[in-house]
Length: 164
Image (cartoon, rainbow, N blue to C red; front, side, top):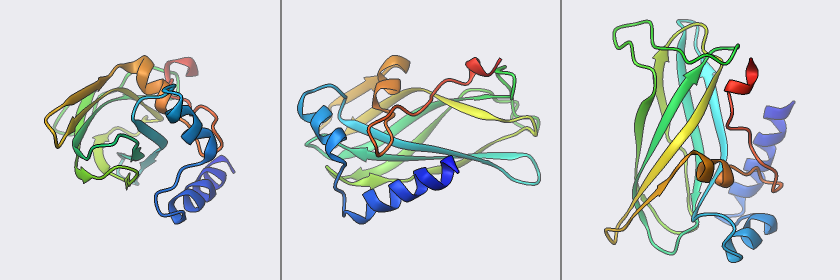
C-alpha cells in the first residue's frame, strides 16, 4: 500500500512538469534543505537474487547537475550489512547518475548492484553533486536524510540498521 501511495504521489508530481509540492518549495525557499530532493528510493530483488536500486531525485539548484554520485550500502532484514555473493563481493558501492540534469528537472537512475538473496534494504550514505559550472556539493548521511522527503513533505526512511 505504501509503494502504491508513493507511486501515485510521484505520478502527480512528475505530471506537474517538474513542479514540486508547496511543502518542498517552502523548505527550499527557506534554505531548510539542500538543492537536491530525493523523493523516493526503490529497491527490487529479481529471481536470481539480483538487487537493484532506483533513486528518484530532482535538481533544486539554480545550476545544471553534470553528475551525481550516490554511495549506497545494502542490508539484510536484521539490519546487518551484506555483500554481493556473485563475482564482486562488494558491499557499499558508489554509483554515478550522469546528467545533465537542469534545474527543477527529475532524474531516475537505476542500477543492478548486488547478488544476495538476503538483501532487504539500502541506505544512501552520501551524495556528491558535480555541477556544470565546476562547483561540487557533498552531502553526508545526515544531510542526505534531510533531503529525503516524500511528496507530502514527510521524511523517507534512510535507516536500515533500525531493522534489528
